[in-house]
Amino acid sequence: MPIILPSTQPAAHGHLLAAAFNLNYPDHYLHWGFIIVSVANLVVIAVLIALFIAAMAVPFLRPRPVPSPEAPEPEPDRRSGAAAAGGRTWTGAVRRVGLRFLPPAKLLPDHQPAYVASWAYVFGVGTLTALVVVVCSGLALAFEGPAWWHLSSAGHFVNSVHLWAVELFMGFMTVHLWFKFWMASWRGRRQATWITGVLCFLVAIFEAFTGYISQTNFDSQWIAFEAKDGFASGGIGAFINPMNFGQALMLHISLIPAAVLLLVAVHVLLVRVHGVAPPIDARPEDLGSGEPDLSDKATVAG
Amino acid sequence: MSALDKPRATNPTHLSRRQRARAEARPWKGPLRHYDIIKEATIAFVVVAGIAVILAALFSSPDDPPVTLRQWATAQPAGFTQVALSELEGTSTSATYGPPFNNGSGSVQWLGPISLQKFFGVSWPVHPDRSFVLDPLSTVPATPPLTSAMRTWESASAKQKSGWTGAYDKAVGKLRLSASIPAEVAGAGPVPEMLSSLLAMARSGALDAALVTHGSFYSSNYTNAIMFLGDSATSQDHSYWNKIVTAEHLQGSQWGVMNETGSWPGQPWLWLYSMWYQVPPMSTSGNADILVIGIMTVLSLALLLLPFIPGLRDIPRWVPLHRIIWRQYYRERPD
Image 1 (tube, chains in turn brown, blue):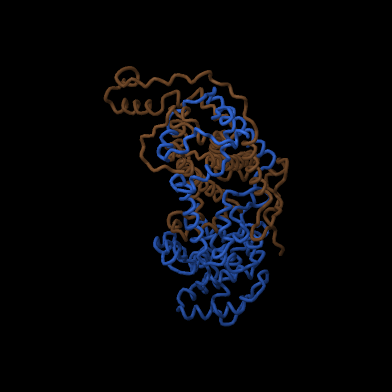
Image 2 (spheres, helix red, strand yellow):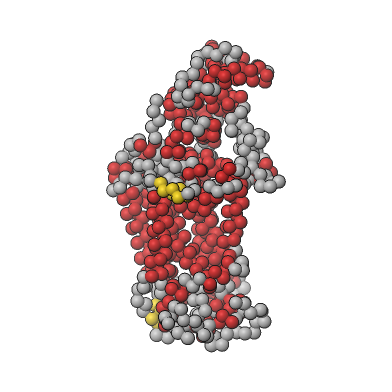
C-alpha cells in the first residue's frame, strides 16, 4: 500500500483554499556542505538581516526637538504632598519608592534623548506589540479549546495569526537583541536590563517550543518524540514529558507565558527607570557633567 | 573625514570602566526630542497586528494530521508486527530506554562521568510489554483463541517466552515491512495469535484509543502511543513514520529541529542548537543530546552574563557599528 504523506492530504475544512498562497507542498531545501536549510527559514533569516541593515541605513523620521533640556522633575517631597501621604504605612512606603525610581514622567515620557531617533529602537516596541497579538490570539484559541483550530476555518485563521505573530515576536526580538549588543546597551549600570532581556529571549524559545508540541498534529507528534531524548538526557525529562500533551498545553498557556510576561514587565520597567544607554563615547557634558567624575581610582581601561 | 570615522578627542575613553559606567548611568543632559510613548505604542500595535493578520491571510498555517497506528499497521503490517514483537520481548528502544521511563540503560546519556538522566530516575513509568501489547489486548472482546493465548503467555517462564519470541522473530523478522504476517509459526507458542490480534486491533483504530486511555475516561497523555510509533522510527529506516519525516526534512540529521512541514518557516531561532547535532563528535555520539545541551547552556550563560565578560563586552566598541546607528548624534555633537 502506498504511503500517503499527510501534507498531501486536503485539509478537512478547506482553510488552505482561503489562503492566498498555498504553502502546503514540500519545501525546497538548500545544501552547503553539512548545512541544510529550507527556503522558508532562509527567507525569514534574510528578512531579519535586511531589517537590521535597513534600520541602520534608513534615516529616521525628522525629530521634533525640545528647545532646551527641560527642568528635571522635582524630587517628590518626602514630608508632604502625595508622596508623603500614607505616613508610615507599607502602602505609603511602596508609593514613595515607586515615585522615587519611576516618577510619572519617566513611566510615560513625552520627550526622550535626541540620539534615540533611529529605526534601531523600534524593534523593542515591535516585540512588545507582537507579544500582545500573540497573547490575544492565544486567548482566543484557549477560549475555544485545543481542537477548535483543526475543525473550523475561523479557528484555523486565528491559529495562523497566532503563528505569524510568534514569528514576528521572535524575529523582532532577535533584531532587538542584535542592536542592543552592538550598542552595548548594558553600559551605565544597565546590566540587569540586558539580563532580563536575554532571559525573555530564552524563556520565549521554550514557550514557542511548548506551543509547537501543543498543536496536536503531525508536527507536535514528531517534535515531542524527538525532544524527549534531549529532555531525558539533561534530567529535565524527569519533570517535563513533551509527549504528555496535557502538561505541555498547561505549561504553554499558564506557567511559561506568566514567566515571559513577568520578565517583559521587569525588562520594560528597567528601561524606563534607567533610560536607554547613551551613545558610546558620548560627550561628558551630555552625560550630566562638564567634567567627568574622576574620583574613582580604578585602573584605567582601554 | 566624515563624522563616522572622526576620532572624538574629548570622549571619555581615558576613563576607567567604573568611571565610564558612572557617567553613562547619569540622567541624560544632552539634546532631547519630543516623544509620545502612548502614540508610538498604539501605532506599533496597529502595524504589527496588521502585518500578522495579512501574513495569516496570505500564508495560513500548517496543520498536517498526526500519524496513527492504524495508518502504520495498514501500510506496513510486518513492520508493525516486528516492532510489537520487540515490545513484547523487551528489546525495543522504549523497553530498554532508561530514565525517566524505566530502569533500562539503552538510551542513557553521559556527560563525562555524570548522567543527570540517571540521577533524577524514573518518573514516567513505561513498560512496553504490558502497556503497548498485553494491556491493549486485554481490552479486546474475548475470543477463545486469544484468551487461551494470553493465559498461556502470562503463565509461561521467561525462558519459554524467549523461545517463542525467538521462533516468531525468525519467521517475521526478515519480512518486507509491507508484507503480510503468517497466521501460524511453528514453535512460537501463543505469540502469533497475540500479535495477529494486536495487528487487527491496530488496523481497526482501536489500538490508538487503547494506548491513550490508560483505563480512564479522560486522558491527555500520549506517551505510550508516541513511543510505540517512535520505536518504528528508531529500528526501521524505512518505517511508515520515518518515510514521512524524512520527506519533510524533519530528521535530526536534516536540521529538522528548525524545520516545519510543507513550505512554512519553522523555528529558525533554533539554528545554533540544530547545528551542533551536525558536527563531530555530536553527529556520531550516543551522548549527542547532553553534549548539545551542555554547549548551549554554556553559550546561553555567556550571552546572559556578557556585560561581565572581558573581551566579549568590548566587541561593540571595537566594531563601530554604533557609529552608524548614532551617526546623527555624532554629527550634531562634534567634538
